[in-house]
Image 1 (tube, rainbow, N blue to C red):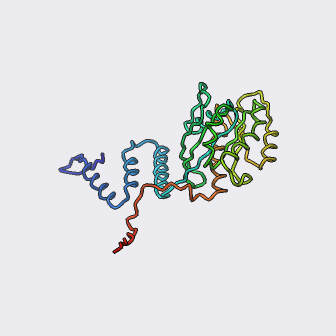
Image 2: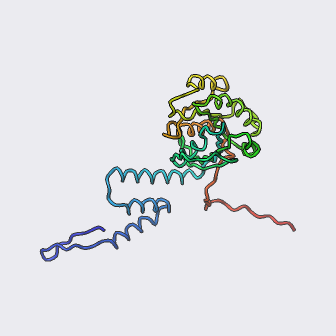
Image 3: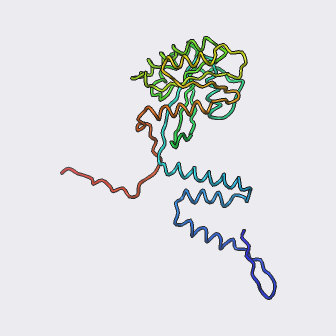
Length: 269
């Protein structure tokens, strides 16, 4: 509440100005957009905390307005493939929820989570699909390959067989996703579980495979301690942005143009 001091008969009187201040704010907001009013209201109602917190709220307001002004975002489907037990589910959950669950069960069929993010000025909704790696679930997972914009081929650095199977996973994806130009399709390779000390696949081996099979980006990750997890998924978005026409990925926001001229209707006699 704002307090004004007035001098009357030699003494100070405290006069609450909450009503006048409210009137001033309402008059100020009348000429502004609704989203600016909402974000400003959040700022005004916040307690006078430290300058760092205040600056953080202003940054939040800026981000909200940038999303609104963008008017549209892009939906990208990213799929995780690899042997069972390499940590695909843990990687997805770490990235989307920032949690690591040691009691995760093997995926049956497919699961997916959404993640909204901004990469290099582009607002993106990433739809991350986690697939079962066991052979018995092949018929359940392969129908979901179609429509993928990027594939994250995943192995575990403590399991050489999962690394050797990367080529098979790549071939399976290209076939069932009906990829028209495999040489230009964005693949990203993940070597997971680098928190484990006993490795069976060296960094040099993995990098050589990536170079020989399409010069793919390679990330050594740990879902347990979050090492390189965000960087890997953000690189997947960058690969899609760099290689594809994004016009078919656009998600229009629920807005109505008030200046659009109505189309004349025609009738037949």
